[in-house]
Length: 436
Ligand SMILES: NC(=O)C1=CN([C@@H]2O[C@H](COP(=O)(O)OP(=O)(O)OC[C@H]3O[C@@H](n4cnc5c(N)ncnc54)[C@H](O)[C@@H]3O)[C@@H](O)[C@H]2O)C=CC1
Ligand SMILES: O=C(O)[C@H]1O[C@H](OP(=O)(O)OP(=O)(O)OC[C@H]2O[C@@H](n3ccc(=O)[nH]c3=O)[C@H](O)[C@@H]2O)[C@H](O)[C@@H](O)[C@@H]1O
Image 1 (cartoon, protein in one colour):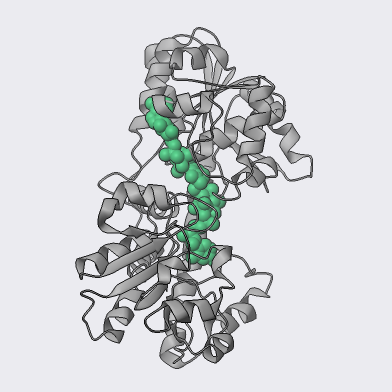
Image 2 (cartoon, helix red, strand yellow):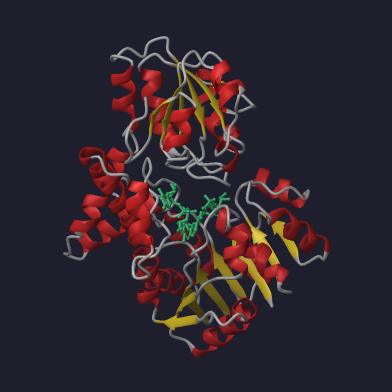
């Protein structure tokens, strides 16, 4: 099939590449000329594991192409995916200007039947809005489909190729047949394509993300309570997670959820509630607790250094909002670093992939070090913000040699308490007793 994807970010580029991988002829459109040039030159503009292999293969097979021209995109695709940003607006709602703007432009450009697919995360009722906007511009027949995406950054290719489910919201038989045909290769394992109405599909996405954010937040509260009563959250987590009704995943406490989606999606669902005369009390709490959790290490660090951080040197390991991505949107590291800089601290930072993005935001206020050990030289403490695998089994002797004092504030509970005690570190983590 001929497919167009409008917007080539984490979702659009993965969608386009994976759809090319199953034999479709895909044209990806982006407004960003530099990005399109990069892709036309065979360069993947984001860090996403395993994407490069598929990207190369499908470009070489002539199944994956790039352009800045929306007209070309509209001419090319029988199905046109909108994988555009839906960032948080000032009032917490999802900003639909990208999606509705593209819909209007598409309405002016179509001249035969198209299926327009909302892949972006959009509030209930958006498929109707997209339909209205396009209808104002054209008399040509078209259908709008809501097809939310559930991929995770860092695992995006695998999640797209082997989805646990595909959700499709639509009301047209013609579009249903096309969407079923497109996704058939991805559900060979027996995982379902769940077909429903547009509004239910739109809400499914927000419900899933908000539920996961709530699950994490609940564990963060349990962790905070563990510290008050001397329990160990790792043990509690294992004890709870083995109940299959609860499940082992997404129970890891830490310095809050970040990323381009959970924070904005929880707020957008909360705002949708308000707009529809419904008060999502649980989401109100989740938002507030998570805001606090992002900076939960700061009072501990300040108190350890008697409130005086001026001139202190901190090594920061992990800047991305989670491992295996270069994405720093709403990363807890940002909040921690901004505060420490304000207090006059010097920061030596390291991340395997996210340093260029952090540099765009922080400029020369940070010392960017391209080696995790070098970042700890003469540091008064090490602060861990992201659980990259390479941080899990460091050479503790090297750390002790490098650092002024062996002190670790760990926002991701990477180390075993007994091990770290034997190594002679002062160690403060989340929901466990302080060592040292
Ligand atoms: N990042 C993720 O893991 C996931 C994101 N989503 C949702 O998917 C949507 C897209 O998210 P991301 O891919 O992360 O966004 P992104 O910010 O990484 O990429 C968006 C792309 O759209 C391009 N763009 C903006 N305006 C355009 C226009 N008028 N025409 C053509 N291109 C345009 C930008 O240049 C950029 O390349 C959002 O609604 C997000 O909530 C859903 C599931 C997972
Ligand atoms: O809509 C989206 O954009 C995507 O949002 C999340 O994916 P992602 O943001 O890539 O990353 P996650 O692995 O879900 O992690 C999100 C945040 O929660 C935190 N987290 C996750 C799990 C956990 O147990 N504890 C925890 O603190 C992570 O550190 C990270 O900051 C969802 O998992 C995807 O299904 C969804 O498609």
